[in-house]
Image (cartoon, rainbow, N blue to C red):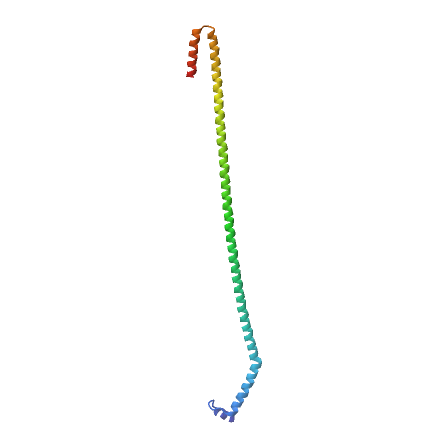
Length: 173
């Protein structure tokens, strides 16, 4: 019964010295056990977590720097590709211009050859016409001379009339 009276007489507002001593002893033992078994692992876990966070931040910073380096390299490669494309396009345009110029020169030379051949053909035909004409005139002259000789043998008056008629025939043809 004494214990029930003791508990009935207990008040939190009015602590007794014996209870305070036991509370301090139990708290000290609890604190010692916590310090030995809980605080060190918790502190170690916090340090490990802090180190992991710092490593993650360092890796993120390193990754960001690598990405920036890769982006700069990509920009450089892109610029080089654009320059190369421009160079290839310029070379292609120059080649196109050279081919067009060469084709024009060949066409011009071919046209000149065709014109020269045409002139030569015209000249050859003209010469052939002149030769043919001379041959015809020569034949007419021979025929006239032959006829004149025949008439010459017949008489003078007849001869003059015949030459005039032959000259008129030649003018008409």
